Amino acid sequence: MSAFLQQEVPLSWYLILSAVLFSLGVVGFLIKRNLITVFMSIELMLNGVNLSFVTFAQQWHAVKGQIFVFFVMMVAAAEAAVGLAIIIAVFRARATLDVDRIDRMKL
Amino acid sequence: MHLFIFVIFAGFCVAGAVNLLLQSHPITSALSLIVVMTSLAVLYLLLGAEFLAIAQVIVYAGAIMVLFTFVVMLLNAGREARTRGSRAAQVVGLPAVVAILAVMATVILQAQGLGATRLSDGLTNVKGQTNLDQLGAILFTKLLLPFEVTSVLILIAILGAVALASHEGSGVKDQGSERTGEE
Figure 1: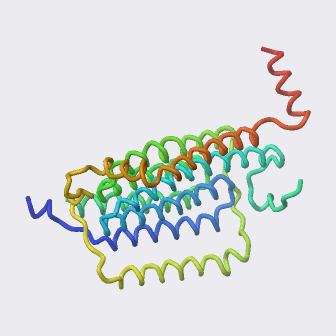
Figure 2: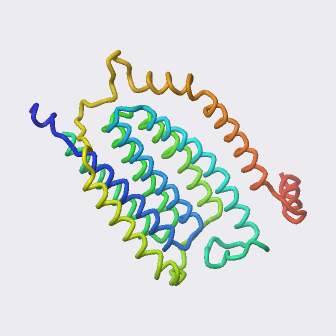
Figure 3: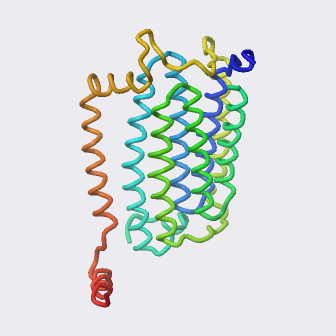
C-alpha cells in the first residue's frame, strides 16, 4: 500500500501534456471556422502554458511560477471579457460568426 | 496512486481538447473545454498548487466558461460550416504545429535534471507554511504593485467590455426604447 502511495510521476510527462494541449489549441485555431471556437482554442493554449508554469514551480520548489499563473488567469479573465464583447459587436455588425466572412476591418 | 490519478485526468484533458476540435457545435466545444479546465485543476492539486486548483475551477471553469456559454446562447450560434479553410493554414500551419510539437517533445524528453513528483510532495518549506501562505506572503509584499496594476487592468477591461457591447447607432437604440415602451 505504501508503495502504491509512493509512486512517482516524472515531471516530463506533465510537460509533454502541456505541449500536447498547446498544440491542440494551435490546431483548433487553424481549423475551426467559428469565431467563438477560435477564441476557445486560445484559452486552451493559455491553459497548456499554465500547466508547464505549475510544473516548473514544483520542479524548482519556487512559488513564483504559481504567482505567474495567477496573473495569467487574471489577464485571461480580462481578455475573455473584452474579446467576447468584441465578438458581440462583430456579430451585430455582420450577422455572422464565420471567420471566412469576417475578413475586413472596415464595414 | 499518483500515477493512476495522473493518467486518468491527463486522459480527460486530451480527450476534452480533441473533442473541442471535433465538435461542430460551439456549445459542445465549450462544455469540452470545461472538462479540460476541471481536469487541469486536479493536475494542479497533484503538483501541490492548491490555491491555483481552486482558482482554476472558480475563475476558468466558473467565470470565463460561463461567459463563453452565455455568449454562445446569446448569439444563437449554430453549427459551423465545414469549409476548407485557408490554404496557408493547411500548407504552412499544420506542418508547423507538428514540427513545434516534435521539437518540444524532444527537448523535454532529453532534458536532464527534471525530477519526479510524489503524492505527498507539496511545496512545503521548513517553516511549515502552506501553499496559500507562501503565495500571499510574496503577492502582498514584493509583488504588491503588479497586483494593484492588475486590478486597474480588470477595471479598464470591464469598462471596455461595456462600451463595446452596449448598443450603438440610432437604429439599435430605437429598438431598445420600443421594447421598454412595450413593457
